[in-house]
Image (cartoon, rainbow, N blue to C red; front, top):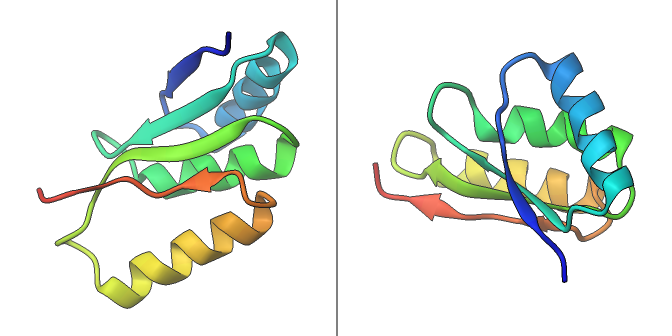
Length: 92
């Protein structure tokens, strides 16, 4: 069984280290939501410190961004993570 956790975001240096710790203990996926911080930035930091853990946005607000900006960010995270990224969008 794998567990998913909600990624707190915030300090990107701490986010990267926390993602690595969670990967080391066997967490299956990190979910980042757009509550106080951009969910994509913390996942980008996690991408460079992890190799296996899944990464995803539980909610990224779609209407505050252009479709092209969302597509580029998702594509970049998907490539950087080696296919571990899932994009979850919310209306507001």
